[in-house]
Image 1 (cartoon, rainbow, N blue to C red):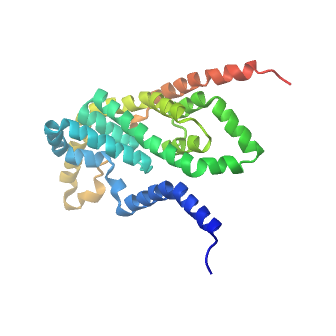
Image 2: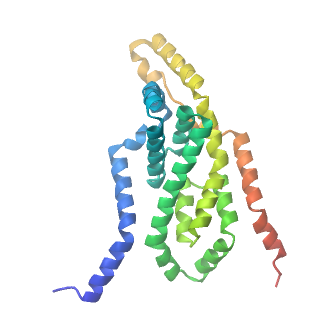
Image 3: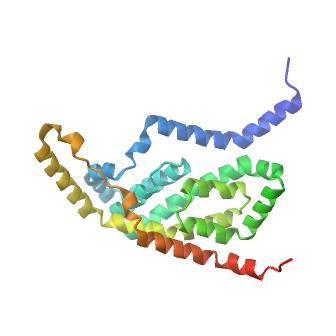
Length: 263
């Protein structure tokens, strides 16, 4: 029994539409299966900082290109390590250059997710959306810039979700890229500045770790923890500042809502 030409054509059309999404999911599964995401830690940076700095000293442009590529891949694959990579950029390249490289890498990675989501699932969702979802899509698109800027500035949703949702809601690519760049600037440079001053933190942590090992003896590896949590850099003051910026981004939406005629 052979498939009809129409069914074969539909299958080929679906494969053309879905292959980027399938490839992305396969790459994500492979990276997690290999455990490569576990290397995106401050501890790994501390252990290899001298080697990395020596390489950067003789290969600055290549190092920047590799950093941007790794950052873009990490964001596209939704790996848990964006903050660590931003800190690493500030640590290795300085807060200004490292922050700028982080913004470029994050924007490229986020754009990959957006384009794949829009091409693979966006049209399908639009075609099958019910009345409520259609109204939601339309309302989101009307004020997409303000909404997306708010979501980028205020870290209340996972970065991967904010990358994915606009592609499904019909947001234009230009609006998406502009809000991504503008929205991640404050947080990115805050983490890059923290990374720029990380040397003293690493040295203090290493000294405390070695002192603990000396006191505990042979069995001290389990008792003496060596951890540097990037989440600790999200101070209440930083979060409050990002929330304030996010609320400013929503002012045009609020003004439009109050001016809307009431039935």
